[in-house]
Length: 162
Image (tube, rainbow, N blue to C red; front, side, top):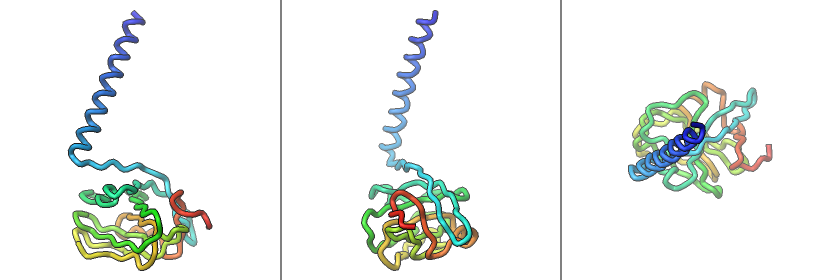
């Protein structure tokens, strides 16, 4: 009886893995992009705020970003990693919700914040200097949480000089 249960368990495992592979293949075939999650902190003058962010690292992930989302939970967002510091332009095409965009230098300093960006806009939003990353959070969150230019983002993609 125990041997039979092991066989059933193995069979169920094989079927579950095959089903999971099928779902992943279908998602890829439909163009669904999967984002890894990562903890991140922002050190302001008064607090250290903890976030859970999705990572946009590949060109496909950066192109999709937060398009088609109906909302963002508090203290969540997306971190775009552009690799080497460079001037960056963002836009809001197919983005349903207003966002705050935090433009971040290689050492993790917030250079600029574009607050409450306009949903669906194709107007470009410039970094205003060389940045390594951009963090997008729900529109109005930076003001509510006291996040300002000069604050520091703590995450492995940024040098830890602070």
